[in-house]
Image (cartoon, rainbow, N blue to C red; front, side, top):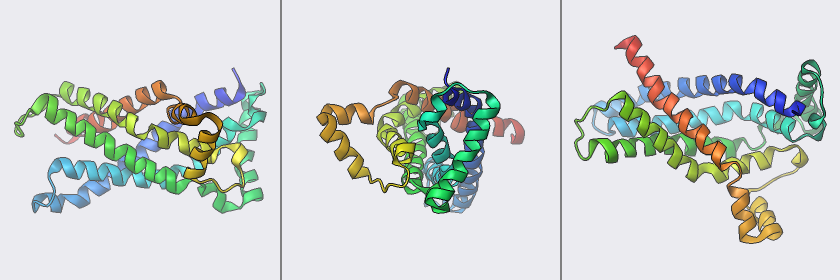
Length: 241
């Protein structure tokens, strides 16, 4: 296993906790702010939940964009393909951030942040939207008063996350392309990347490019949606009733 893979595996759980906590705090704050509108009838509870998810995702995108860029730089830097110790991998990974700032300026840490933040808005809005849609179609069937069981909520979240992954996978691939090591110091546009892929491989090349990592992405999004939408709600009910 390469040093980059080892480093990625060790940091994956920590990054998931970081992302979850940032998103959870922003989503909860947004949902609380929207409650007066729900009480006044401007929003339904479901719509407020979807909007709060999008707001939480946007905030999460801006906060975590620098760490995503550094992770992507590490994963796409050829030097991390070499076999090295945990200490050496960590040391060199730490130096990546300083190297980015020295060569490209501190603002480079936010490279791709607008795309990433917009992607996170799309991610969480569609996850909550499709999960709510599945709840209505599969379990409520026009009966708004029907109270879902935890199992029904879980199934809805898994299916909603799966549908969402179809819609947002191209943007996920795009962010990784913008932030990778070989594009350091370059201005990369969304249109430019797709033109490059079209010129290299035609429509088939663009399709393959936009769907890289599809199976892993579907699994990740489905379970993340289930944890954040259903799992968090279950824990909240257990604590607060």
